[in-house]
Length: 112
Length: 432
Picture (cartoon, rainbow over the protein chains, first blue to last red):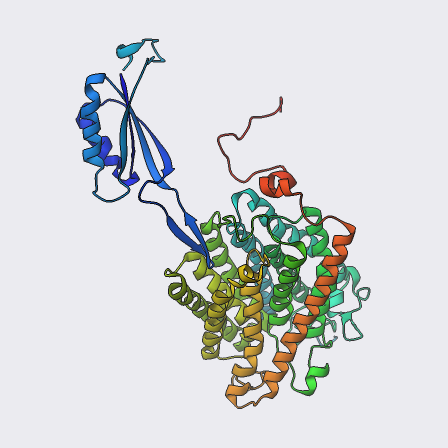
C-alpha cells in the first residue's frame, strides 16, 4: 500500500477532487496548510508598517492507494492541479506498512 | 431662568445626538479591537467599555460641575457646586444650550458622552501591555485632571475661551472639541506611550491587525455617531447643525481619499485600513471646524488631515514610541489641522451665526493666531498634566503587565478569557 500526498494551490482543489473521483478514487483526506517553495511569500502593509508574509495558503491532500495505483493516481493529481506557474505544489508517495478500517477492524489491502 | 421654555425640537435633537455619541464608544471598541492581535482584543474592547462605566459615573458626580460649574481661577469649574447633579434646574448657568431651549440634563447627557469617548481614545496608545487596574485608575484621574479642566477652559468660559488672554487677539473657536477632545487625547496618547514603553517586539515582530472587518464596521459606526457629535454641538436643530452634518461627512470623504492616495503612491496599494483611518482623520478635522466653515473648506481640511495622517503613521517607528493605534497620526494631526484650519476657512457671520472670518475669507491673521494659540495651549496643557499623572501612577503602582503575560496575551492573563474558540478550548471544569 502507498500514501500519495499532494500539496497544491487551494483553487485547484475542486478540479483535483473531480479528476480523482472520475479515476475511481473513493476517499481522501484534505486539510488546509501553509507553506512555500520557490514561490516565496508576499508583503502586506498596515498603516505604513510592512510585513513580509513567507507562508502562503496551500491545500494538502492525502490518499491511501494500492501499490499498483500509486503512479496513476499521482499523474491524475499532477494533471488536474497544474497551472504552469510557480507555486503549483508537489506530489509524493510513501510506503504504508499497515492500514486498519476503524468500523470493521479489517487490516491491510482489505481496509483500503 | 424663569424665562426658560423648553424647545421640543432642539431638545429631541440634542438627546438623539447624545445617543449617537454614546454609540461611538462601543464603535471605538470595534475600531480598535480589530487592529490589535487576537490575544488582546477583549482587553482592548473592554478598555472602551470600562471608560463608559468609570467616566459615566465620574461625570455625574463631579465631571459636569468641573466642566461647566462656577469658574475657579479660569482653570476649572467648582466640583462641589453641582456635585451629583441631584437637582439641576433647566436654564441653569451651566447649561450652555439653554439659549436654544435645551434643558440642562439634555446638555449634561450630551457632554457626558463626549467625556467618555475622549477617555476611551487613550486606550489606543497603551494596547496589549497596561494593567487593567491601572487603566481604570487612569480613566478616573485623567478625566478629572485633564479632560474636565480643558472642557472648562475652552467651553466653560475659562482661560482658553474668549474671556481668557487669547481673546485679546480674537475669540478662539472650537465647535465640537478639536482642542478639548482630539488634541487633548492625541498628545496624551503620545505621552502615555512614551512613559509606558513599547510593546515587546515593537518594530521587530509582526503585530498585524487581527480582524479588519471589525475595524471597518467600527469606523462606519464612528462616522454615524460623529454626526451627532458635530451636528448635535449646534445645540439646536437649525442651520448650523445642518451645515455641520454636511461638513462632517465632506471631511470624512476627502480624508478617506487623501489617505488612500498617499498609500497608493508610497506603498503601492490602497488598503481598507487606510480608507477607514483616513475617514476618521477627516472626521477629527471636522470636529472643531464643522460649525464654522463652508463645505469647500471642510473638503480641504479633511483632505489635508487624511494625507498628513497617512504620512505621520511611520513616525512612531522612526522615533521609537509605540503609539500602538496611532493617536498621534489620526487624532493629534487631525485635531491640529481642524483647529488651526478654522483660522483659514471660517466663513464669518454671513453664512453662519457666531462665526468669525478666517484668513481666506477676509478676516486677516487674528483668527488664525487665536486658533493656533488655542491648539498649542491645549496641547501643552494635556501633555504636561498627562505626563505628571503617568509618572505619578508609575511611582505608586506597576503600570505594565509582566512580560510573560504580555507575550501570552493580556486577555487570558488579566481577564481569564479568550475571544476565539480554538481546538484546545477546554471543557466544563466541574458539575456546573
